[in-house]
Length: 158
Image 1: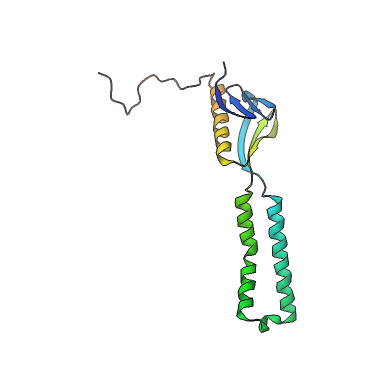
Image 2: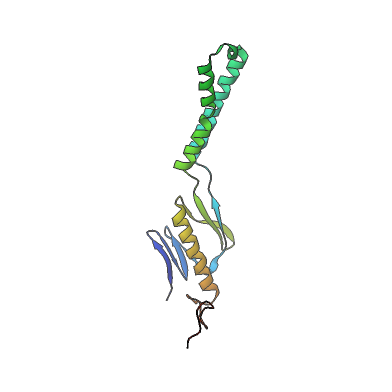
């Protein structure tokens, strides 16, 4: 009987198989598990690039017209604050829409994206469960380690 290591809606890891979104992978056929981060959100990247380009065009226009010498201090402060806008947008975009966590593995000779999640905790739990399932499959189905003697920190029984 297979031991269940992780079970959430749409995802299940047992000592025999890994099932996600209707796809079924036997644990013994999964090798070279690797974790990675997906790409940054395209919207965040576009916003930062467009904002930086607009600020660069404004800077170039002011440079060619020579208007930098005629600006007052408040305008310099506003331009300085605007220069930090792409950095702020990148930070907020990264916090609100972080790159996804990806689990890759070799399945039947090909590297396959097995699982992706934007929740770090769920991703960590599933990854650990799949690694435990591989260990169980590798060591002949022993779900729990066999203990032959008491742990060294316990005093001997009298």
